Image 1 (spheres, rainbow, N blue to C red):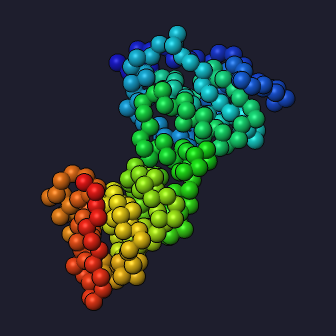
Image 2: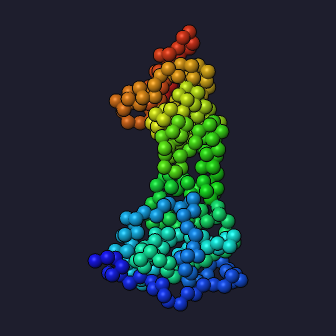
Image 3: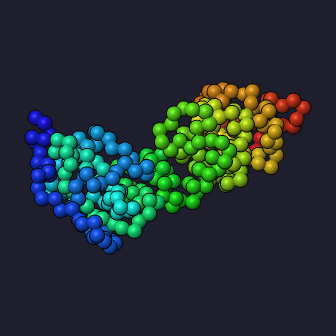
Length: 282
């Protein structure tokens, strides 16, 4: 039996209560019914609609538990901030046509404020992945640290993959490891770390693994005053990131394992220069 027969979707033939163009909505929002044909969704700060979630909504559908879709009226458009899956479920139950849905409509919001509201509302649902949450924060511009990380990454010539990573050179996929490195180092040292990695390994994908960022952040933090950037790039450019990762997996499971290997490789490639002493704290 199809979902359409088992459930009672909103009727597309019922009277449509579309607000006239001259209506002005006041915050904290006004409840109105709108046709889904007038709603714009799929904005960059939102996670994509997943069919498995739509199917789950349909399977457990209860019209008495239908909460209004959160909508921002901006630039003449009704932008869906929260409720994409519910809209998809109602349309699917109606055979793919447009339906009438209850909406809580806000006005006066910027795109960035919509993104911030989306991130807050979504915390109470299925958790956003770190990538999805960070992308929403970037779109909202509400988190200074995240915006600074993105700027520093791009200044060095990298791309922070806030969509699905493609595996291209100079594309940084890790989220938590990169943010942790920034928190450990601060802006200047973080930028220096990125420049060292770019110079030594030319953005190869394996040099941009989470373990490499963890190890490099601790290495730079420990030897910040002693390290020669030129010597690092010259020595480490002939060391494969794969070798660092392979050896790091054998050692104990902390960022220290990779930092130690990077130091050993740096010292092992010297040609008349000085070695870095062991200064890691246990």
